[in-house]
Length: 125
Image 1 (tube, one colour):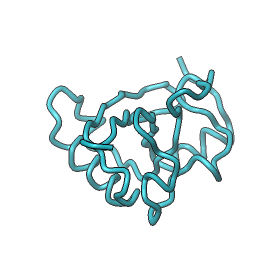
Image 2 (cartoon, helix red, strand yellow):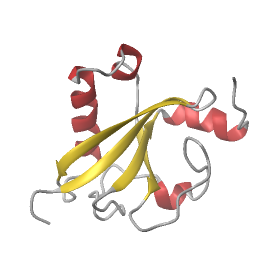
Image 3 (cartoon, helix red, strand yellow):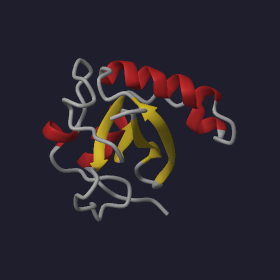
Image 4 (tube, helix red, strand yellow):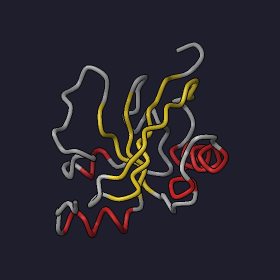
């Protein structure tokens, strides 16, 4: 695809608080590795204007596909807790091989937080 893909990355700060911010990236090469894309996103959000500081400085380390174009959306408010083995992106894969396509939506979060939330999926209000 000429010009690269449009990928939305949902920065998940807290699963319990449902605290997240979507950030849209244009011109994403789907041939780059997941590891390179994670590095790129971290560098971008660290300097992105308009993003609150807690989102900029958070120790995100894992990406998971939330939604693919023309697919069914999850009814989980932050992201689905299902199919981690298929939907969590592996560092050494290309985005394309991991299942990322144009207009895919990804969650970017800290794996430790996700593990805790998944063990006890309660939301705090």
